[in-house]
Length: 210
Image (cartoon, rainbow, N blue to C red):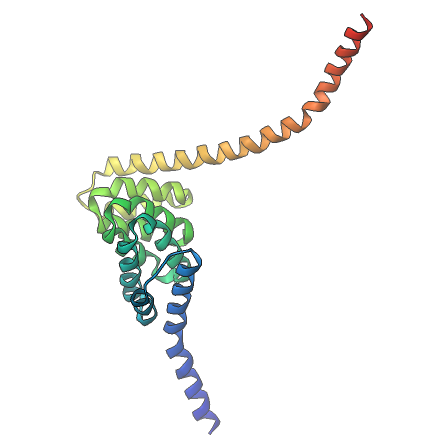
């Protein structure tokens, strides 16, 4: 009897897995402020497997192209195993936002950065270089893998152009990081200005004495 109950429990857990993932994806989209129709929400909940979830999310993005990157990012965070499929489907649905979609998903799921770059580039070959640059900037630690993945996914792509784009993305990430660090340092220096001004205050005293 116990064995039967255990088997039934395992079967129920396995069956609930996809459903829980779909619910998490729907919840993530709603939490991101994405407005879904009843039909779209039902489609997301009914989706089973990475490809089905990606297709449902792409449908939502197609209806809200201005929010394509946010939609893809939210869905990928909720279903990281489907990150590449989601990015590719959304990019295919909204080609003009391919680079933004790839970057947002890569930032949300860094471990899948190379896969995301490859899948999006394959879905929108004309944007291969832009996608490579955007993903390299979002996940510079995966730059080497990104360059290789994109050129393999899009054989017709200009290898030199893709590599240059990746280098530009890494440089942009470094610059952004440096700017942020510089801003922090600058704040610290501003904080120490009064101390330096103390010496200036001495100069002020001298002026008073004179």
